[in-house]
Amino acid sequence: MERSLRGARVATYVYFVLCGTLMGAWVVHIPAVEERVDISHATLGGLLVLLGLGAFVGMQVAGPLTDRLGARVVVPAGGVLCGATLVLPGLSRDPWTLAGSLLVFGFCNGCLDVSMNAHAVHVEKAYGRPVMSGFHATFSVGGVLAALVAAGATSAGLHPAATLAAVGAVGIVIALASARALMPAASAAASNGSTDTVEETHASPAAARRGTAGRVWLLAVLALMVMLCEGAANDWSALHLEDVLGAPAGTAAFAYGTFAAAMTTGRLLADRFVARFGSLAILRHGAATAAVGITLVALGPWMWAAFVGWALFGLGLSGCVPQLFSAAGHADPAAAGANVSRVAGLGYVGMLAGPAVIGWLTHLVTLNHAFVLLTLLCATTAVGARVLRTESGRTPRSEMAGVGP
Image (cartoon, rainbow, N blue to C red; front, side, top):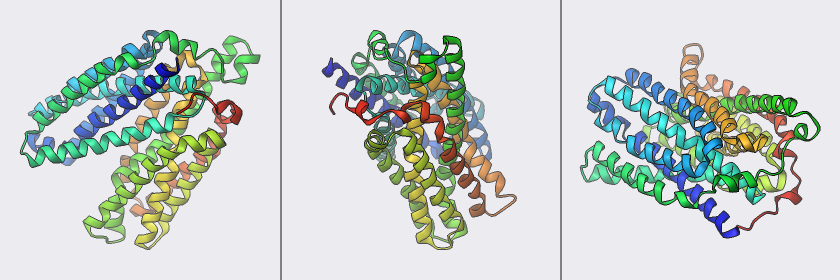
């Protein structure tokens, strides 16, 4: 049992890397596809909304399916579909075919994303200690792999469609080869023998379901705010240094690199801190740290202050989303997929909305002052972290001594 559980954990890492690599392969080819289709930045921005819409729908479909059929069926299916549809944007020749390609690829990516997160919840439950943040860290590793592959392919003069097709084909093989190591539905159900909420123990089943649904939607709102902040940092961090502080383009690019590196490092370390202090403390103090960081960015007049601020912002946000996903899955393990799909879906809306919201605010205030909104969202998340008190945030340390590493 211990060996099979470790195998399931390794397989989950593989699928997170796979998801990050497939999405990263598309992201790094956006400029080439934009040039091939001959569209403006504004048109591309509108088409990318379809990618998010497809992902949102895919999450809502795959979540309940994972609960019904099991991760061993849905996760590899999502990986295969995501790999198979990755080439479609590279083959697009006009805005209409690109729109359809992004919608389909987004749907498949959403299926893989939510099903692997639901399986991660079951693995964490079986381990009896936090492992979710480590999974999310490997997603970032996938993005790095995609960037390296794209750089090599571009240097070799390969067509974007050929590169995307090759990455997708390898992804399909990996998705199928890793499927057997995933936890079967019966094992996942066995790991859900205990409940995580007080209401399920002392209240009627109907009242417990209503209470769980309410908490899950609160978690989803927090995910929306946190991921909106993350999305804003992705698109505006480099522009902030260049436009507000007058940094050269090369130096400004390090702003996002600082943010991303801090976030990845934080996720690699977060599970140990969750095991010691609880997820409530990680969400509360992480959001508070992020609030301090983005305030330093918004109000600091020096370049070094901006770099420190972006580092604190990434470090603070790093552990927040994994705790929200984990809490949603543990709220009702029998419906982990559906609950994670709600939180991930609304969070994805925030991720897409972040850049647009900040862009709209720049019509009213300067870019750095627009970041004050992110300070308010982080502060609100820190206050709202109390929603985890009825979840894993109240788990005593003695319950965290599960299976070894």
